[in-house]
Image 1 (cartoon, helix red, strand yellow):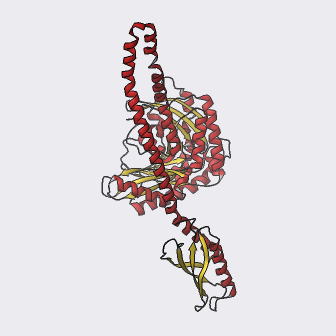
Image 2 (cartoon, rainbow, N blue to C red; image 1 turned 135 degrees about the vertical axis):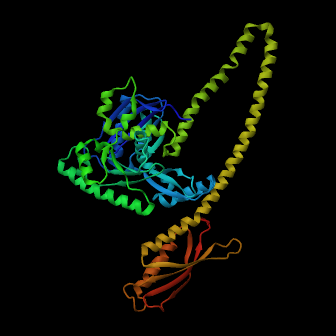
Amino acid sequence: MVSHRTIILDCGAGSTALGIFSRAGEQLCLHRTAVEIFPVGAHGAEGWLANTCAAIQALGARVKLSDPVCLVLPAQHALIKFIDLPPVGPAQRAQILEFAAEQNIPYALAEVAWASVVLDQSKGQGAALLAAAKLELLDPLCAAAESVGWEVSAILPAPLATLAAFRLAQPSQSESALVLHLGADGTTLLLVEPSRFTLRRLALGDGEIAESIEGAAPAAGLIDYVHKLGPEITRSLLHFQRQHNWAKPARVYLTGPGAARAELVAALAAELPQPVERLTELGVVKLAADCDSAAVASSARWLTNVVGAAAAQLFLGHPTINLLPRRWRQLTRRRRRQPWLLASAVLMVAAPVAPIWHASSLFNEAQRKIAAMERENKPLRNRQAQQKIALSRLAESQRQLEQLQVLSAQRAGWLNFLAELEGHFVRLEDVWLEKMQLLPSVGPEPLKIIIAGRLLDQAHPLATVSVGAMNRVQRLLQSIDRSPYVRVAVDGQHFDYRQPGILKFDCVLILRSTHPL
């Protein structure tokens, strides 16, 4: 079911824009806008986060909201990958996407919020979009919204909002089109066809170019920006055409804060072979009767992703994804249950009041009322007995969960041990592991592992291994010996000097029983 009202908060690179929308049939209706502009020169993730949180505080003081809010995360803070999907079922598809997340996200999955959406699974080989963002950025944004009384229900990557804005403004687009979202910290390139799309973010670098987009730099900075942007667009289109057989775009649409400059549109039109025009997404948006049209006109340059995110939330058919962290989703669910829990508590408290009052006022009917109350309380007592049984089952489940957690920790022991062993070899350099073999153990004997490796003596590549190489191997074994997993690392050491420049070594590791694998 699609809601008929939504509130969008676009956390852009140079500003934070708010929009309140509703759905009137098949048309998007705008009720109110508000924009907070960042100070000039505020760049970098830390500066952006601090300015965005401050802007949310300022907007919260001006606009009181009761409906959930959808945040739009800028492209530079959202990792987006396209994943090829084989024709498999939903369960196998979920496993493939989870594996793809582990392979494509350059952070531990516990440090990010990630989600995916299937784009096309109709013809054999399908595709999915994978998006992720770091929790160290998302948590402060949600906390800032929470502090002003706003409930965040969704976090949408900005490129998907830009895509929705384009398809809202050009619903009958039948040819390939290039959409450029020109922002303060970079340019998002969207190549859109009727049934698919792809994207790339162009980080053009220094602050002068970024400020020239915002209108603060001279014409020379604008020309420099266009001369850098044009070749990047050409290279990106060639890459898409060669790798995935994308068609050449028939037209280029500019949007975002930088597209407000008429000089930029003209400069890009001279630089690119395709016709260039400004995307007029607000032209298809209806202004509500209570909307301030002057405020909309003054903030139009910052509303592209606000309009696009509203279209993605209110209309089906737009690819959308939610990067809201899990703990904030759980908090939202608990809040929505609180009114029902409170109402239940009030009903439970008020239920005995009427019978008691009636029994005290009608003494002659006291016995009948008592019998009636006993009949009413019998289901409650049965329910209490069922609750006791459920609590005992819950306690047993918790005990089993603790056992599973211990087992999980033991299963993770091998990963931690191998990671630590890899660290020792990486720090020493020019040494590699050739063999690792688990020795059979009998009864309560500690676990034993044979490791063998080689060390390259770069100082003496054609001579017998030097004393320095031997000392390096000794340091390696000593560092392994200090591992919390290893009790003894020198049992059965053996060294082979026969190959010039190469020192072969092997030893037996006796592992500690306090860190089982």
